Image (cartoon, rainbow, N blue to C red; front, side):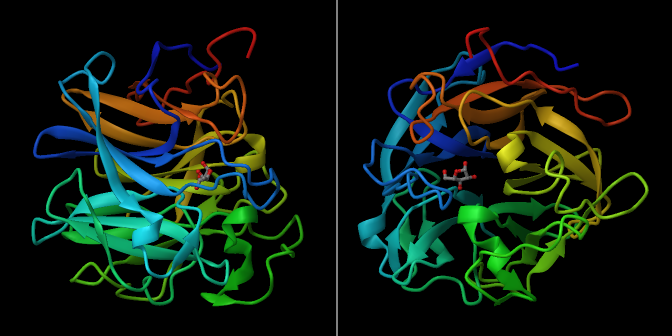
Length: 335
Ligand code: FUB
């Protein structure tokens, strides 16, 4: 049974989605996608998500449920990314070993293939300056980076099927145009994890599959679309365990799986957020002060327009055994 909890729309002034949230030097920053009323068609490639820039939001206070949220303006514009053509989707930002801030973002290149770009700033609010080329060997969408306190390394999680193009790749090579999937009883197309290079600008190794298994240790299958990975990776640590969370896409849930190290395997544990109003669902999980928060989005304020999403936050809680209490995604009966 999902729990109804109090939620807050974080930034009613504008449509934003896909919040990646971090606390840098005691202050909370939100790195969202910036939705707008594009005329691009609504299709299974996600063409309607035609974003052109990123803004950084900062919380001007200590309580995500009440403190003012400031828009720090344009942090990166697609016209300043030499290799990118369209669709700035879910990004993430980390503070590097050199004290600078590194933004990792997906965009389609001039041949309409998603790649991962890197942009750097001296400030967590930007502006960020893009590297001239995407990361070598990068592909697909939804980058999320963990700075692991266990070994001081940075691990990037990424990938998304359907419009996110992940199904095109096998052993990190493009195998087809992305129209075929394994049979329903085969292991699901996995998200990927990769350690970043010391200079934060490239992969330090070949990306590896993020394998999600059931309680018996069997990989979740392609046909199990109530539990299989679709997109929207996030990684956080709780009591020394690695919590990989993600969206199930066409079944519209945020789910999680727990592992003992950044590479997994991760054992499926359950649902974090039941379906929200709108097609996509996406999130980050962050501790701020003494509380844990789930940042996410829905299409409530636009009355269900998928390309116009709004940022939300609510508290998240764990049980004694480390499992997460499922939150109800819908807030009103009419949704
Ligand atoms: O915002 C564009 C895409 O929609 C994201 O990359 C996905 O995770 C979904 O939220």
